[in-house]
Structures are given as C-alpha cells and as structure tokens.
Amino acid sequence: SSAPVTEPTTGMSFPSVLNDTQRLLGVGLRKKSILGLKNIRVYAFGVYADDEDIKKYLSDNHEKLSGSELKEKELKEDIMESDIRMSIRIQIVYGKLKIKAVRSAFEQSIADRLKKFGGGDNKELLQRFASQFKDEYKLPRGSIIDLSKDRGYVLRTTIDGTEVGSIESKLLCRSILDLYIGEEPFDQKAKQDIEQSLVSLLQN
Ligand code: DAO
Ligand code: DAO
Ligand code: DAO
View 1 (cartoon, protein in one colour):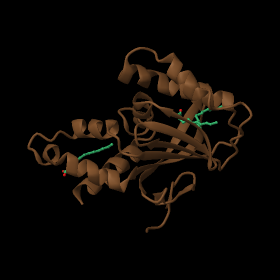
View 2: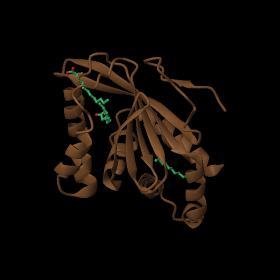
View 3: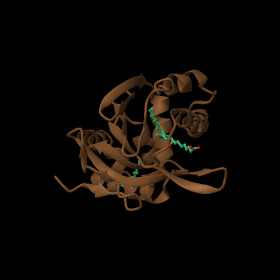
C-alpha cells in the first residue's frame, strides 16, 4: 500500500490505510480561537472510509449513480447517511487540553448538528457520548483518538488503542461526520480533498 500522509501545518502523520480496509481520504486541521484572541491548533485529523463498503454502495446504487439526475449534494448526503464504515483519526497537537474543555467544546460543536439532523435537543444522547470522556484521561500532544463508525451505526471511541466506549446512533454518526465533511467543516480544504478522493473511488 502507499506511504503515510503528513498534515502540512502540524507535521502529524497519518497511515494511508487504517484497520486493514479503511482508506485515507484526506487530512486536515481543527483550530479553535480562545477568547477571540488567538487561534490554537487543537488537533490534526484524517478521514477514512472502507473500500469494500464503498464498492458495495456503488453496486447497490448503480442506477442512482448512472442516472441523469445525479445530484452531487444528494449523493453526498446519501453517503454520509449510509452504513459505510468510516473513521476519523484525531492526533492531538495542543498539549494542554483538559478533558473538561474537550467535553464542552464537543457539546458546542455537536449540539447544533444533533438539532439539525434529529430535531429536538437530544440532551440524553449528547450526555451519553460525553460521559465516555472521564476526567482522569490525559490527552498529551501526540495522543490518538479514533472515532470509528462500525456497521449498524455503532460509534466506537478509542484512545491510544484502548476502547473507551461505543454508542449505537445513526444521528450521532451523521452529526460527527458533518463536522468534517458537512456544510461548515472545520477545515474547508480537507473537506474538498475528501470529496475528491470519494469521487475517484466511485469512478474506479
Ligand atoms: O461522476 O461517477 C460520478 C460520481 C460523482 C459522484 C460525486 C459524489 C461526491 C460524493 C462526495 C461524498 C462526500 C462525503
Ligand atoms: O481553553 O485550554 C483552552 C483551549 C481549549 C480548546 C478546546 C478545544 C477542544 C476541541 C475538542 C478536542 C477533541 C479531542
Ligand atoms: O473538535 O469540537 C470538536 C469535536 C471533536 C469530536 C471528537 C471528540 C472525541 C473526544 C474524545 C475525548 C476522550 C477523552
């Protein structure tokens, strides 16, 4: 297989294949401004999708794809909602992350997506996910968090190779993907790269 890919701003390196079958589609950077003053680089990320599942999606949706009414946006939404195994790999850049800050940042970024895709405020779902992040965890620079969407919309969270929890929720999976490849992504360039990779996978 091919060489790892380096996120250029941070130098963080991402394997081109994850869990044997998931292919790297693109890498990016999550920044956050503190008090509107300075922009910190929080983490680099890579987005992966399962080759087999993409192929299966292709054969199952042959007509949609070859039909004249192919609309890129609809197809994209369909892909984000389908049962394709995907992963987000996160590599921590900012060395002073506190779990409390992670939890509240997460609640901020995900809450409006849960509302957007699910209606309601989904407090319970949000809390169930955030409760996986225990105060005693440490996330020094270089820590690796994998958010893996398994078959059946099970979202599995792993920190440095240790599973910390899993939650079955199509809504949560959809909402998390939206942070990276939705309408207001953390990193616009990364989103474009990911879409481009998907297009070439679909065309192969
Ligand atoms: O022309 O054969 C084709 C297919 C073009 C498909 C474009 C799909 C874009 C999908 C982006 C998905 C991002 C999650
Ligand atoms: O006030 O120390 C600070 C900065 C906190 C930034 C928090 C951003 C957290 C983003 C989520 C990280 C997920 C691993
Ligand atoms: O960047 O704001 C964001 C959202 C990040 C979503 C991923 C959160 C996973 C955090 C796991 C932390 C475990 C202690």
